Image (cartoon, rainbow, N blue to C red; front, side, top):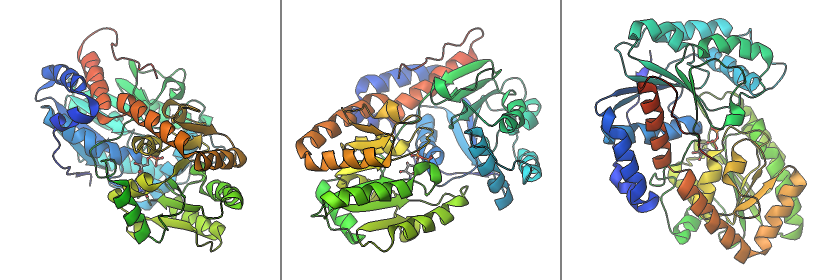
Length: 425
Ligand code: UDP
C-alpha cells in the first residue's frame, strides 16, 4: 500500500536571510494563484538518495506558501527494485541489462499501487521511472483537471533502446516532463511541455545549515579521524557510477606526497539500491585495512548532521562520479565553502566552475593531482570554496527550485505555449 510521508513544517520566511528577500517575494507572487491547489508528489523511497532529500524540503515549503502538497511513496517488493535498478542503468545507457527479469513485478506493482490513489489533485508530480506507469492507470480516474508531470532525475539522452521502448509509452501519458538539464531530455519524447529544472539543496536543513568548523572536526573525530591532519571526503551511495574505488586509488596517490592525508567515504544504503551493500563491501576490501581510509555509512549511524560535519570538516570534497544525474553532494560541499574535485559528467559542471570553485576531473590521476594542489595551496582552496558557496546560493537552493515548480504550474494551468523558464545554467 502506498503510504503518505510526513514532513516537518518549514517556513519560507526563514530562507530570506540565506537566499535573499527578493527570492522570497518572487515565490510569494508566483504562488498567489495556487492557494489551496492540491499537489501530489509520488516516488518510490522515503529515504536515501537525492529525490527523497529534495522532497523533504519542497513538500513542506509548498505547503507553507498555501498549496495543499502531499507526498506518497509506493510500496514494492525487492524484485521490483532489482528490476528498476536494471531499468535505471539501461536508461542511462548501460548495455546488457536484463529487462525481462522482474518486468511483471514492475507492471503489477504499479497497477496494484494505483489502486491506493483517489481524488483529483491539480498537479501530480511522479518522480523517476519506478512509479512512471501510474499516469496510465490514474489519468482517467483523476479526470481532466489533473495535470501530470513526470520528473526525471536521470540522464535519458542515450538510453538502451529496449529500456526506452519500455518506458516511453508510460512517459508519453504525462502533460509535462522535467529534466535536470536539456542534455538529459530524450530526443523525440512526445509530451506537451518540457521544463529544465535542476535540483537543489536546503540551506537550512541539518545537512546544510552552517556549523562551526571546530564542531565539525569534533564530530568527525568521533568517527576516528584525526582533525589535525588533512581530510578528503566523498559522500555518496556505494555505486559503480560514483567510483568509490577510484577515490581510494586517488587518495593513495595523494598519500605518497602527503602521508598524513585521510579519506572518508560516507555512503548511505538507499532502500531502492540493492547493489549498495555489495559495493560497500568492495570499497572496504579495496581500502585493505588502511587505518586512514574510513568507509562509513548510515549503518555506522552517520546521519544528516554528521554528513554536514564531514563536508564542513573536509579540506577537499570529492565527487568522482563517472556518470551522474546531478550530484547534490557537489552543491552540498560547495555550500560549506569547500573546494570540490568532481567528475566532469552530468550536472556536475553546472555546479563546479572549473578552476574557480574546484576542479572537474576525468581520471584517477587528475583527481589525485587536483586534490594534492588544493591541499598544498590553502589560500587558493579558501578562495575557491567561497566562490562555490556564492554560486550555489544563486543557483541551487530550494527557493530557486520552488520558483521553478510554480512557474511550470503556471504554464500548465494556462492554455497555449509553455512559459516554463529554461534556466540558463
Ligand atoms: N547522502 C546521505 N548520506 C550518505 C550518502 C549520501 O545523506 O551516507 C545524501 C547526500 O548528502 C545527498 C544525497 O544523499 O543529499 C545523494 O544525492 P546525489 O544527487 O549526490 O546522488 P544520488 O544518490 O541521488 O545519485
